[in-house]
Length: 272
Ligand SMILES: Nc1ncnc2c1ncn2[C@@H]1O[C@H](COP(=O)(O)OP(=O)(O)O)[C@@H](O)[C@H]1O
Ligand SMILES: [Mg+2]
Image 1 (cartoon, rainbow, N blue to C red):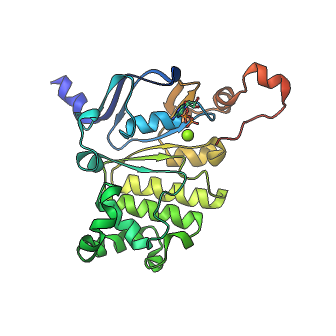
Image 2 (cartoon, helix red, strand yellow):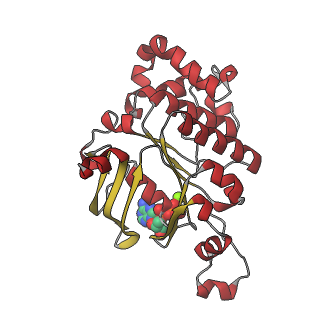
Image 3 (cartoon, helix red, strand yellow):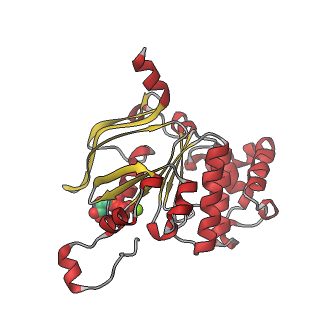
């Protein structure tokens, strides 16, 4: 039946999802669906709603209205840390590792799904899962740093640890909120290459918000992402195959409000 065909392909569906903070709209009612295995870049100026959208998709925050289906289930009904952590894993711009713990311990935390449990359960998890964590560290190329404290790593290395932790968690979808914005351009390209490569090789759905300055060459971004969603002022301005993203659309997405344009000649505002 047609309905079932659609259901098997769609992994994530937002239906008229809306979010405000203190009466201020952050995201206008938005509907979209994401197929399993899709790799999507979400772009837009600072304050356009990227983090809000990604947090909604990851079940980190709840919409004011509308429904989100993830893996055929109502997202709001999924148990955090359990079912939810098998469906979705999150990676942030700020490398949210525990700085005083070793790299290996940080990676092992991916098994637990719930940071509240981390400290108490690490000793139990350690022997059984150690090889899984070491394999993940090998995949991201920093196996030799396993015993190092996370605080001592460079930004690029920290993001590799965060990716290794996701590998250990092994969710079906990865949500990455500006995963490379704290890195220099060469490092950013490395990490994007790794993140999108891992998603592709393991058939994972990937949704990443990216500052356009990180992917200024659309040649590069096309090889990373198949689809691009442009957000502006809480609205989807375009939702396209990545190869259809033009300079004209980018310029329009990042254009300054008229009022500000009179006061400054800066072209593309830096994102936060
Ligand atoms: N926790 C919050 N409380 C109040 N306002 C918020 C909060 N988070 C985001 N906003 C507002 O919602 C809008 C969208 O923010 P955000 O989703 O963080 O955009 P982006 O990630 O694209 O910079 C902005 O106007 C921002 O100020
Ligand atoms: Mg943001």
